[in-house]
Length: 260
Image (tube, rainbow, N blue to C red; front, side, top):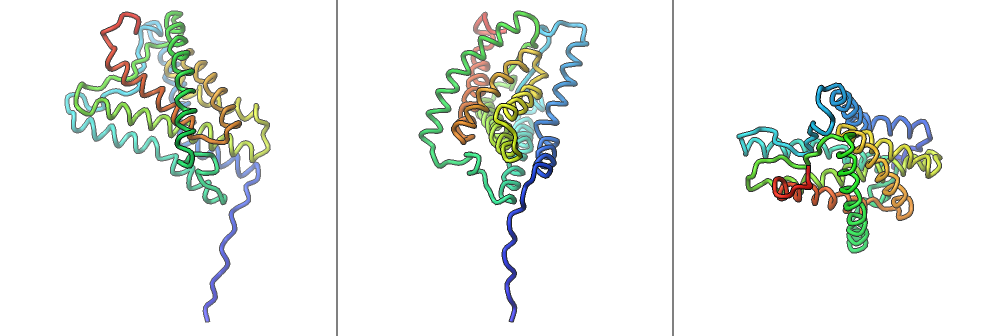
């Protein structure tokens, strides 16, 4: 008679294993993006033009003049970019947890949307004012949120890009990272400092303003995650902020004088 073997217990995560896991996750995701952003900033600083006279395009055409190929590449690129969220979900399950552990789920849609919308309103307006100030000071590139062709899929792709940013960044940098660092015994503010600096690092391609602004955003978002224990309100807020920036820029570009 064949007997079933007992289920394997979840692996015990000590500080060393957590450190190795975190390094592995961010080496193939936003940590690698931070390194690329640093190189791009160095390139911008060593270029003959001032920073404010150079552009940082956030969502641009990937196949100019070929809209269907462009759309396909946009969707493929977003799918690849958000793939690390699946890796994090797998690693959480391996340790006996899940995305629900970090509040990246749909258990509280009303509260998450309400909190996210309020946070987006507070951060979005302040962020725009800060960007205009640092751009005028010449320490930031001209950020072009969207430079897609005016075709039927322009707005849907911009909204999908906003959602991709919100899900990827808040699940990884707020929820997963702060959760793992807490399990490793890190103090809350030490963990927030690492999370915020990481968030700022992969925005370095925008200039020093992009770095500082996102570090401050990381402190706010990180503290709210530690207080709420949920990443989903931050996902909502980030998605709304980027959606307004991407779509708003597409409609306002060339129609207002105050927008660089």
